[in-house]
Image 1 (cartoon, rainbow, N blue to C red):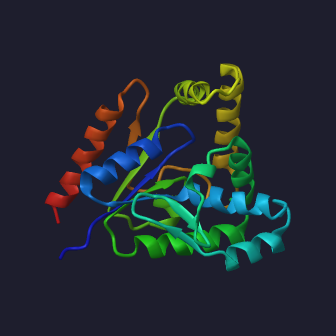
Image 2 (image 1 turned 90 degrees about the vertical axis):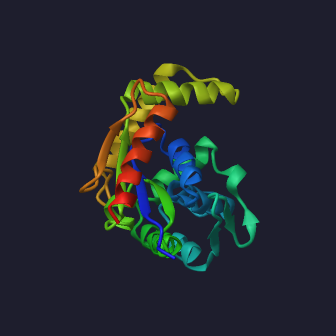
Length: 223
């Protein structure tokens, strides 16, 4: 049986990576891998164990000893416990952003991500999947949208979850994360070489998914 493709989707916060990666994986019958959720899982465990983001040794011991498992739908277990539903808290997101800048954490998770994707048939999304994790991926996408559009999506999501925030606060947070992601020394966010750049501003999910499926099917036809 022919090995499935490795497909990567990178982009800034709020660009729609998770929604589209899940939809694309479902359409193709592929595994879905949310690399950002893996950093959130480590962040959650660090918070529970009282490990500071500045505690390099504590973080190294954590990633060296924890057993992280990811199923085909992207659910994440740590030492047998399903953490998936606990990973979207803002505090965990902030912690994940800090620990993801640590070399030991990144290298441990890169190794696991490559192991998960080794057999192909996977859609991986994150900030560095096409640049560092799978630089030889069969199809790479860089999904973008204006900061205002991404903030609007995030703002509506937070309102639906009952969070009391202003649009201005969310927009400022989006811009802050963009600056942090693109300027970090280790695996900064950038458009991967050979990636298809997709600006989703003003486009529906189905429109963007259609564009992505077209590129994937072109690749499959050329194999």
